[in-house]
Length: 452
Image (cartoon, rainbow, N blue to C red; front, side, top):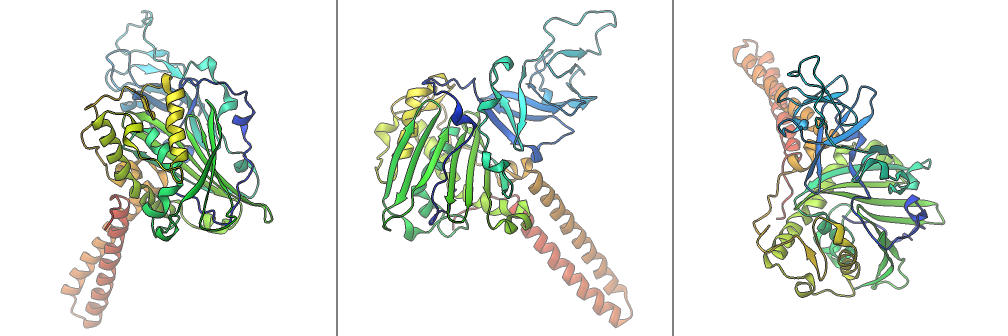
């Protein structure tokens, strides 16, 4: 993905996470992770996800409050996410055990009325909150959660800003996603002639500099060298889940931001939650349906997807350090290498990682099979409320038009009046065309983009 900022200057970065005292340590459990956008959360059924392969489930209680529990019934380890919500409690569909907001078991159908609830009949619960239209979960103990370090975007709370949110599951580790989105050099090549992408003629040496590197963040700047006095662009990595691009035209008061949040679902899996926002030319964002924006965003991500999945597969097949595999250039890879070195320095608490000279739990042969590159429907449409609704509507239009076409064709065959026959045939043909158009649109919600 790219940030179109040829004439933009970076806005001063101000947000809650900058007000905290810097500590030169990093613990992935003492962090907030974005799960989904509020608008994509299904209110009436359990919502399953994972964090570093730990299965979790979200649901709303009878007061509409979000609850997050381990996705495992203590009875026989069935998944609670396969169950249902009854009066604000989540019920395991295997034997009907029900659990409340703190993970306590509230009902066991097979237990006599006068019997005490088993001491261990409980599920671990996690703190979960809503902030700026996103659902966040704290990975550690609930009492250690610090709401002030949720990496929100202050500009979104200001009047005049509009934005578009996008969600996508990806078949590679979160660290490879971060590497991809802090790498401006790939945009001109990988996203050539794509709306919101780049152009091959703009591929050039870049001037890059790391401004700050600590346990909490990396801040860098970059600019092209082909034009004199080109404005600097700034990229922030805020551990563990955000890469932020923000640009500002001071004389006009224009701000553009691209926030790329992510959550490590597990080994070889992550989720991207992208949020683009601006306070200028807002009419287009307001008028254009969210699902229409997503068709192009999917294309951009899918241009990189097989490259990154293949990159990860090959690195893990070889089982040697990136320092021996990579051939980095100062004029393109400075921020990428800085991020991998950040993992060397601060990644020891992570369940697994691939740094520049070190790695953890990435053994030769463990993930050397070809990654499963699922289609767009499974990666995006299924978890995006806007695209899912558009997909269902498109499918209904396709089926309805096809039914109308068949019915009118029958009318044309049976009609004695030539005028009725001609009218029926004309409308039938139009219905077939509309059905075909709906089918074509439907495939865009199902199939991934492939390069020709």
